[in-house]
Length: 509
Image 1 (cartoon, rainbow, N blue to C red):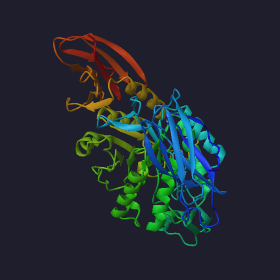
Image 2: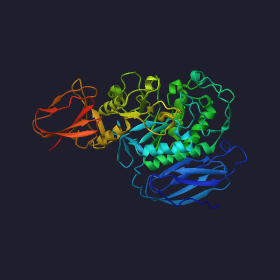
Image 3: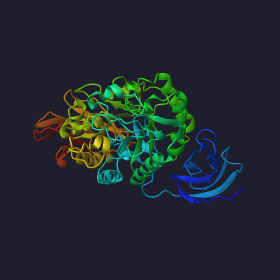
Image 4: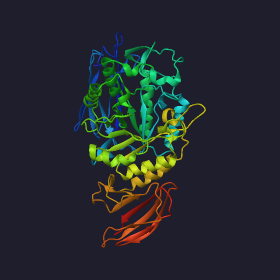
């Protein structure tokens, strides 16, 4: 048996990788296989490997226990079989493991640490010039965002008519410069003149992509990977079943060992005219079979919801379906689907011509608080006009809006919640109220009331005549918290008569 080189230690929930030379005389993506088995006292997993170009095959694995592991690698890629050992060390400080669904409607890392998603969307930031990618990472590092949605395939849509820095397949694109930009919808899924070999991937494209997934992992940010989407002039949304399935298997083999991966089967799946329901169900079956780590899975709509009650879907990834009502539906969706509700597209702060991309910072922040107090989670995006058409929602770069720093303030509020998150509770008709959800002490004596665009000068509250309650007035826009006193029985809290106020009440005794 030939010796191979690999790192002999890896942290728990880190990425362990073995790289081995193999055959490349035929088509390494279809004609040869590689598979690894990784096992220890408490774990035994088999995973597919993949061809990474230049005659090299790789297998990746994410260990879940701090102990010694053994691995065996074999396949038609080589006549040799490979065997080895490595040790798993404790996780580093910012490594809490993959995110899981917790207490039905919320999330927690695998080590039990609560996770409150504050997501943003930058569809093709990883396909922009290197300098812009680095600026995006710097912006993310200075923000409260802990999840980002982005695509593997390039995107063709308003403000997105440039070519990406790489393509996922061997071959060449057609000259798309003649496409009428104002008629881009006519070209979605129409790929005249493209010359791709859908049986041969471009490893460089995926190496760049996974480097950014790894960068995000090091920053503690979840990579919500959009595997398919309809905004396409290159033909990637039109591939046949054989090409689709090869793509899904390759993506899972390359990326599933990263602990921060979430799978989004598609952005706006219902606009992909060449895909049917049975296709989406088949992709889901591939994920469930091949992703050994059971990462979070969902699918995103434009007009029609997917059936989020499907057992393979772990959480709802929702785009608003009404011009005005968005987060207001959160508690209804919780009841209907009994899963976490993530409003990944709640509309974007900006000033472009589209109604989904020109709400104010105040309205964006209001929707986030509305979602939080109804037991869900909002999703951010930003679409401000730019002379160079560099919009955060697609390209990344810098943030210009007023909402992101308010999300940092909201993040602090959420992290102070007992248990795992907030659950909606009955309240007066003109307020949204929440209690702690998943606390070992019931509601934890913790209540949050949000008044949105209403401007009361005071509110009255009553819980019981036994306990003492401490009240705080929260200005969600100006980001201040003011103590309002301690009370027993029925009491009144004075408010400034401004919009976007909240009241937090905690049992003091």
